[in-house]
Image (cartoon, rainbow, N blue to C red; front, side, top):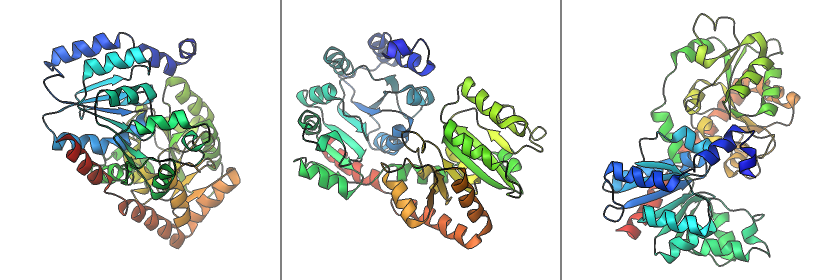
Length: 404
């Protein structure tokens, strides 16, 4: 099905093309680097996509610092992660993950020979986990989050639960995950919290500055909308028709291929400029800046008055913490129930969920007109992130005990 989709969709084509001759390319990369994984330890980290990479990044970097003699081998399942982070300097080798088919799994493990395997959040590939255990390779999942509606906890979940039994240890985000796993007899578990809190606090400390964005936002309220989809953009652009808001808008879509950017530009009309072509001159009188590059969104939140997180009118919202860490109130659509941080931010009054244009406008007007309400929401957002940092330290303590 993916091969068929590759005829029409760029992402599917990347998924297929990135796995061509993958074992030959891995072998040659090892040879070119002078690395023999049977003589030099290799730590294998796997992330599904970009979000999971950002979640795993604090542990990758802490691992490198703790074990400088080990090589870091990083894999991705999705092009959304690989294509963005294939030049990441924190790993020695970066590849797509070969398919979870027994023949390919055996070939991959024989070639890479990892000393340890670390999966981030949700990746429970049955054949990989089975063969890792059979090979005696310590295998961990970090920042996992479990819910009662998942197949592991259903009457038909015996086969799925086997995958969890293959793991050496699970690091989960919260007590509810610990309790759910205990109910099905999975007890090799530690509540560490979510490593994303460590990652986003580091983003604040090293956030890049964008003088052009500073000039664009000067004298106006700025709404930074990250990881948006068409349904989000329809709501956001409707705000620009409201008089008296003194609002400027940055849209950073989840996908930045040319057709998507062209669609947003056409919707916005002559009030929008692409980031790649923006200058102080052509931004004059412009109210919408469309980000057509990748890797800068997290730093852009620093300039926001409020942030909008996309995905809430689809399968689920994207990363709320990158905005909250800067002390920014966040807004998102109704599909947030699977995300504990969204639920907690809502309870604290640091986040707002909207279902339509009217509700979005109401929240924006409240934040812009009521300084006390805004200050309270902003304070709660920043405090929430700061109070939950430290998961990486807990994980590294256990990894060190296991590996040494």
